[in-house]
Image (spheres, rainbow, N blue to C red):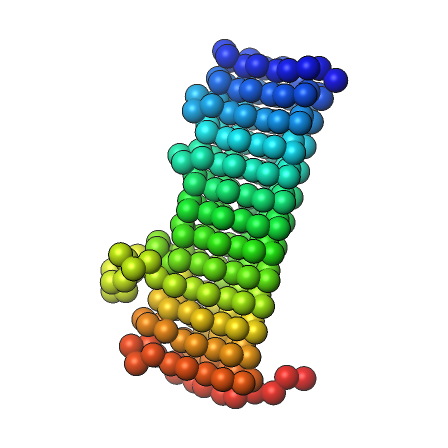
Amino acid sequence: MDSKLHVTEPVTAAGGVFERINVEARADLTSSVETNELTLGTAGDLFIEGRLNAPYISNKGILDVMDTIETEALSNHQDAVVKAGDQVSARTIDNDGTLDFGRSLRADTLHASGTVTAGFAAVTTFQSSGKLTIDQLSGDDVHIKAALNSTVNFINAAHVTVKAQREALLFKDDDARLVVKEIAGNDIVIENVVADLVRGDRVSIGQNCIIKVVEYTESYQLDDSSDVYELGKISRD
């Protein structure tokens, strides 16, 4: 194992196995990388032509991985960018910048105030107050503050909560809303949502929602400011 890689000026080199990597300039690594710890400063710009396996990642710059990312803890700071061409696997993710995972994301917990883009995301505990562009989101607990114009096509979780940030409640501005095709869960509490279908056991439709169809098995509540065009009580198979 090479001990350390410290990049302070632009470089193109092969990847490899390192104890630690610190990037403070542009670096192009032409093969997969394994390291215990990867840190990028604000001037760090790292491209990996392969996979990245790093238990601890702290990014203040730009990290672009052509293949998969495997990590225990990913911390993506404000104005920082992480891109992955294939699957991302993590235990914990804290994101104040931009995550662009074109294919899929799997994590135990994700806390995001920044932007998250992904095809499929399976996150046990998902908390976001930033912009979302996700095809499918699944988990146990999904908590979203719809502060920006966001789209999640499908949400499937035991507990789903979507709230508008209090300073962004003007629904007609089209800023503080979440656009969804389908939400499915046991307990669903939402506001500022535009959806085709909401299906759950206990469903509470709060302020400023436009829902085409709501299906519930146990209980249902509707705020006067929201519109539901079709409502049905169903039974579980």
